[in-house]
Image (tube, rainbow over the protein chains, first blue to last red):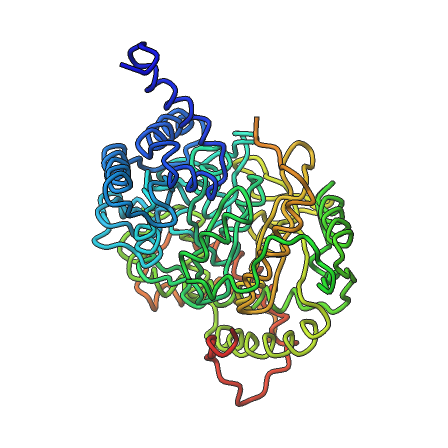
Amino acid sequence: MTASGKPGGTAKRQGRAAEHALDLPLRALAQRLWQGEIRSVDVTQAVLDRARRENGRLNAFLSIDEEGALAAARRADEMRQSAGARGALGGVPLALKDLIGEAGAPFTCGSDLRRSVRATADADATARLRAAGAIFIGRTNLHEFAYGISNENPHFGPARNPWDPSRIPGGSSGGSAVAVAARVVPASLGTDTGGSIRIPAALCGITGLKPTYGLVSCAGVYPLSPSLDHVGPMARCVDDLALLLEILAGPAAVRGYATATDLRGVRIGLPRPYFWEQLGPGVGAAVEDAARALSALGATVRDIGRDFGPASSAVATAILMVEAATAHRDAVRAHPQRYGDDVRERLYVGLALPGERYVRAKQARRALIRDLRRTIFEDVDLLLTPTTPEVATPIGRETIEVPGKPFNTRAAMTRFTNPFNGLGFPALSVPCGVARGLPVGAQIVGRPGEDGFVLRVGAAYERARGPFPAPS
Amino acid sequence: MTEWNAQQTEAAVRLALQRCDITATERDVTAAAAQLRAVLTRLAPLDAVAVEAEEPIDLDWTALR
């Protein structure tokens, strides 16, 4: 019985409030839960309802744990009412890429070989979120073993872009991006070895951070290329990335983060060669708008003529291909046909690459990091580039034309992101516009360890930009 | 590094697969060889990076932060 005397009235109101809560940013949702304005069990039920409804259309989740999530939500509500014990994410539903271990949950890595595998322990990142009170509602779709950017998974079906389900969401953390963009969860975790957080964030119109290499533990995450692998947050706004990064890596990780919009004294470089070339229609204009907005906030924006892109990208490509092939050698020998064609071929290429290329790449990486820190990053504090050269492409398209010239989709889409996996610098993707009805992402790159500063500038830009539209 | 032709890349793929005791289809070998050639081209900029002979391959990432 409700206060108004109508049975179920309170439950209905709570249900509506919970449904409305799905549109809130993570920090605001956590605050409402913390203040007891809404119950975790209602929010979690609304999340599960939406996840099931959207999954038929978008295939963001490989599995949904309704029972476990609701039980955890009830516990979170009980704890709040009784002991007042709650972490920064007490009762907030989140989603994890199915490459990141979650004790007892499916751990397929998007592979046919691992359909029945379950994680025996939480990954470090999972454990940190769980300790902060997060609830995990499901395992998100990904490119097989995170080795690709389209999320066209031959075993579990493609994840689909909520802006246009005939198009890729990007990958490999495609399901994590879709779940956030489609307002199923306020945030998720992804992994990024060549752009796998930033690319889907850009193509789906959300934010994503590849932190400084090593800042967030990869323990308990299925490896693709240990020299390049990163775990990072994906959310609908930069402020939520900062909240998650602090939980994942501690307060020092967000040193320099603030919500001030005054960017006077901040020096931003636009590395014109390579990173601003061969762009699809409307992509460059959207990122130029972002540069103008940053300038209007007080930042000094200038062009950089030095071309470090091809060498940095080559570093990442050589390391990735050899390390991934090494990691999968025994499995692909035993079960070659249980790998998707694209992944299997790439593994074969990695096995055939000369060892000299790998060693050379590792040496070049050291030399480039040293050189860029002493040169470009002496003159500027941040770099601004498009995250991808093109908006989301149709599912099944292996080549794109930018502009007028055909490129392999995977190679094209990673060309602005994978250099910073090799260099280890923190890199943020933030939505900056819409081209041909699809989102465009801007990438902000900082010095190693200055993740908080990157987030600060990203948040300032975001406030100047105003609300970014949701997919219809 | 000298550019490899189609025959050399195909031979490299066959040898690598043989060395790892992997039985691949002809289609896979052909596709991997074509891709290897493209990848080797993309890796050519590595040779333009000034690297000292004694440059180590490991990095102290903690010192970078």
